[in-house]
Length: 181
Ligand SMILES: Nc1ncnc2c1ncn2[C@@H]1O[C@H](COP(=O)(O)OP(=O)(O)OP(=O)(O)O)[C@@H](O)[C@H]1O
Ligand SMILES: [Mg+2]
Image (cartoon, rainbow, N blue to C red; front, side, top):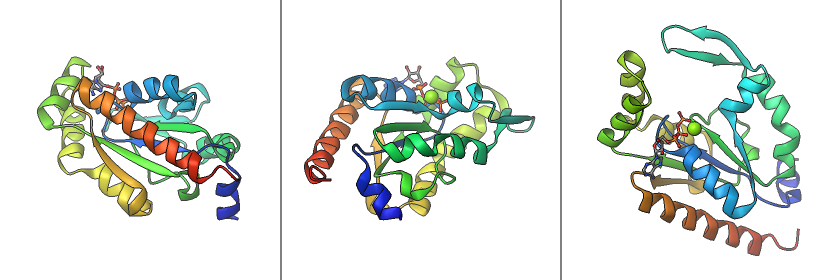
């Protein structure tokens, strides 16, 4: 079932993940414009579809109703052609994705970005720790086949452009390899 569903996709599903502030949405928006693939910004979709539960005071963010979110996305994910943008990855079904890109920054860059966004205290520290301990990269490697998980530096506009080029090349190869499906 899993393989059949993947083979029927007319276009691949790409997951862009990483610590908050690494540049996922910046990349996804541009990638979506260049490729025509559908950008699914999970935080926004969760909010718009009432998939957020009570507010977690310790982590200063709302708790996600994962089951409700996943049920709502199943159909569009089976169609393919999606760029999924989220700061976590372990709760998505493994069969959804053809490739995973984990964006990375250095601590100083991330610190400056999060401070200019107004983050402070525990929320700021937790996110910096998340990047230092490469939590999302480890989560991706533990949740998906390692050969589809790729790490990309996302510190400068030049790296942003290089990442878009790299993903476009990957996409071309996917279409070449899957042209007879
Ligand atoms: N490659 C880059 N070079 C320089 N600045 C960048 C780069 N990528 C993103 N930024 C800047 O960093 C900030 C955070 O980017 P963005 O909102 O895309 O992060 P995010 O990973 O989507 O965060 P979140 O998980 O909270 O949604 C923005 O101000 C954006 O302009
Ligand atoms: Mg974002």
